[in-house]
View (spheres, rainbow, N blue to C red):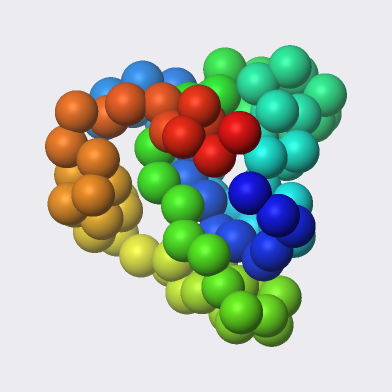
Length: 96
């Protein structure tokens, strides 16, 4: 996958802790989370599984989507993941 703006959701495991982020390089950023290169929330809570992502044409649209999603109810986030990834597979291997 080439560098391209994306919004993503990481999970610690099914129906547990979630993290929403935005990046211009999804493969690199998820790798950093998985290898605890990113200080903060995901490292502290072990949130390393790529549960969902969405590619965008611009960083502006990706950032706007991320901000809106962070305001969502937890139920909506879980429904979004379940819609495209019902088995909660770690999608990282599908993007490398």
